[in-house]
Figure 1 (cartoon, rainbow, N blue to C red):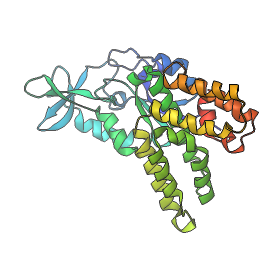
Figure 2: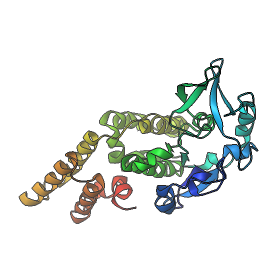
Figure 3: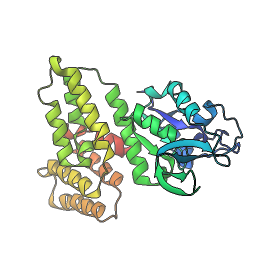
Length: 306
């Protein structure tokens, strides 16, 4: 399978395209994620023709609307140019399986960016960067992350796995059996978001047929990527996942081995063991005891090795 395609702010991969002619190369992008993803880089400000180097820009509130203006002279308003550019600048991004955007950028910032008052010149609210907002509207289901969050191991790994799941779903053949199989093999991965979301997806799969195939696929995709993936993965839910998986080994493990497995689950729950280490152990037990149902679970390939 090809590497997932991730659209990314070009400065994060080392392109010298920032306002000062420098880059903002991100260590986790260049040293880790570049081994897993293919990157498609962009820079909306360069696409707008603002040049390299260029005057800095900021977000400003004008009559309740967010504008993109020159930082020193707010009468220089780039908003119309930005929206015009955005309409044609998404070519290539529609094929992406993930999007990484630059923290605090008035164009690319995905997490809240300061918005300044027109008269006061003081920041008084926050919103997404103009380009980031456009991407969220155009491609609401594609997994996205702000570059600042990549420094958090848990958030970075969640994004990595979400991208892989999104790619897998996009590659599905649009047949009922494929949707059912997808749901089956991703059961314990999705379970990390809670039992209720997993059951809701199961209900969507129920009764899928040729006559409602398009609607079922669309509903499943919208709920998984648009709703479930917007939630947080908690250690409590992961502990529930581990305990459910451990149940498959009840009749196979001797007393000492069973205690060792449950001690590892407790160690994860108390923060003394990583989730990946726990999954590697469970993957080993799955192979050792030839658990046919578990061996196809994507949970093991997503966390057990990368």
